[in-house]
Length: 346
Image (cartoon, rainbow, N blue to C red; front, side, top):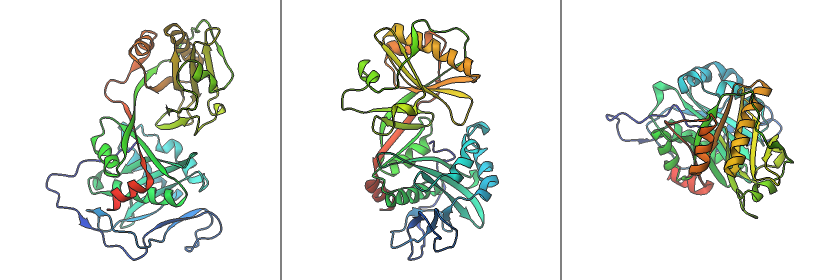
């Protein structure tokens, strides 16, 4: 999401205490017109109404809509994760400009200081994708991530979401506990691969029409079934949450097609995101080579992919110059919105 900047509470921590809240306890988003606080259309305001208090060691936390003027403080938090290579500075402007129907960003504040942030993308199919949970190093291990997740899920439910999903790295044990604490279950594990651009082309490959029928042809997608794919740190379900046109690069190998690759340039970094790869060994060899050439042709710095591969496909990918991230995999968690709220507020 990843859920970063979350750590285990110290062993000397006291037992969680109930947070005192006013009688008004529900996060409300006004889709148009001026909201009760006069902040204009499409803003979020707290109207907390009769929600049960959350268990937390935090006693003075205000959760509110994130604002453009939070940029400097949010970026300072972001700089403490992923060795300063976090993606939030690259997407912040988009988060601030998106419509309420597309998603929302919330910030946690203590004594006027932003201590945490979280974004929720409202995906097709009534899915709330929780991402970008970041907590200031001085305030980790105090239940803030749980609080943000709960408020984000609550608002998503109000907007009509029925399912909640998030991703994190397999080595991030604290973030995995945040997901488990919300009653979310692990639904997918993606291995992470990358390769440098290359000038050589893959023989026998060509652009093909954007159609999910090609995935059925190579056995990736059963007729009437679904396929979860990873696009960067986000996951979407095909065909229910995306159209073929969402992926501008469709490559096929063989005639008739015996292997298929879906890819698109990353919206945030100079990379080509390989979203799905399947088919025969020879076809995958050609497609992988052609994808490296495509990155070279577009002037991109890397080809990156989070994939679920069998042993033979993995060996082929490694043989043509891809490298696997050995330290961690990308995990996707999922749960029912109602059950998640019950787990977080019970």
